[in-house]
Image (cartoon, rainbow, N blue to C red; front, side):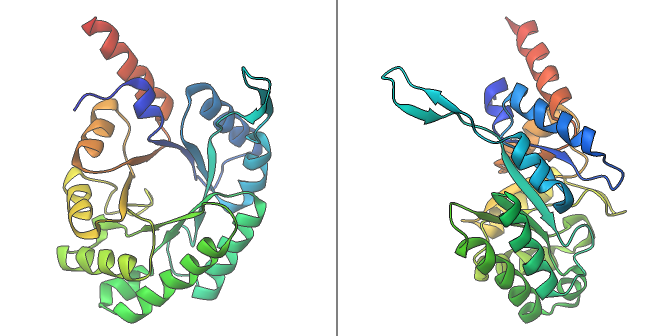
Length: 244
């Protein structure tokens, strides 16, 4: 699979979810997303409004003189992050507030304890409540569900995929990047792509090189969540230059 720098950029959600992240670091994140053409930035709810304002579209003139809006990175908000152990109503309210602040997409953490215990009803209803908030909002809003795949058995992963499909989520996502069991693996992405279809797959957690990002795309991911987006693009650009 050959991936251009531009194609990789449009798959990357430039991410900063560390608890010690500062407002100034969020500004840098947004500026880098604009400079490199990333599809979006992924931040904690406290910074959604700041990121949305930093990335707000600006009017431009088309060749015909008609007003238009240039494509800008979207804002993705993490909800119930990183444990997934918030009450369902809290997750739904957090998603609603993030959308009001300017988030286009919501990445919620699954109720991991319930999923591990095999409580299909709780997991589905938890996702459904957030999906309802996201999809009833104006605009094309999307919901991704973080399954924390490194903490799951294969049966639990498959159950998580089924719950996401039944609850009408839009994506399944591998990891928060904060779990001690680790982040995304190629095999987990491959299994999510297989068992969650037609839902799309976002790979996140520990993806720091162009080689790793490319492998995730080849396995079926269409989005990459990473804090190393700039390094990945620079690596890919250098590799392509060496081949020319």
